[in-house]
Length: 266
Image 1 (cartoon, rainbow, N blue to C red):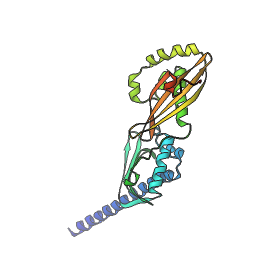
Image 2: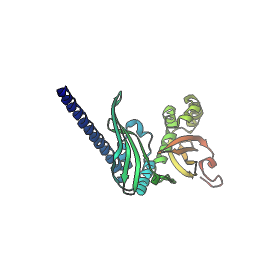
Image 3: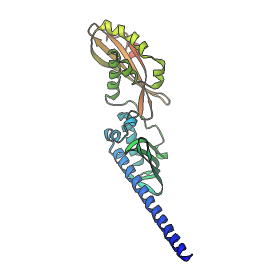
């Protein structure tokens, strides 16, 4: 009986040591993931941030918006110091798509703390959450600088004019796609394209930002120059979280709809 108790005692000790080792592994793995994530946030490099993301998640993030979010985190929280000693949890499991690791807990920063949750699939981030009282407030500020949304709007209109309707509609929000069909769009746009013949250029003529408490959007007016004439178009993006959704468009549209003064020459 005494020998059995000794053996059980050894097994119990092994289990304890194993549990401690697993705890240190979890903390170490979670710490490494969090540090890598916040090093990129601290650098404010949107391209590197997106490079860390899983391919399916990349389409949910726009570089100008995530850059704005990173700047807000750096301003309000400061540099990342590490995970709290105990308030963390790291889980790893195998899925049909690969290894999923979820690391969450309290992270400490120079100016405060935050609850952070990272989900990684095959070492690529599929989702992230950073919540803190220090981050409360309106971090999203308009207008946005740079050509990102102008280029996206022109690319969308170009797909329409080239009658690549399915490709164009794939760029829109799912709610807008429910209201339109490929056939409807093609039948409306094809005669315009035929009349204008070849497209020569698309030029942005107006940008209109709305920075309301509930409504945050960007409307881009464009001039489409064809061989046999020209027509105006517009695209509207609505912002939500860290990306903008293409929620409305019109081709052709009136000068007023494109944001131009109808009494002035184009």
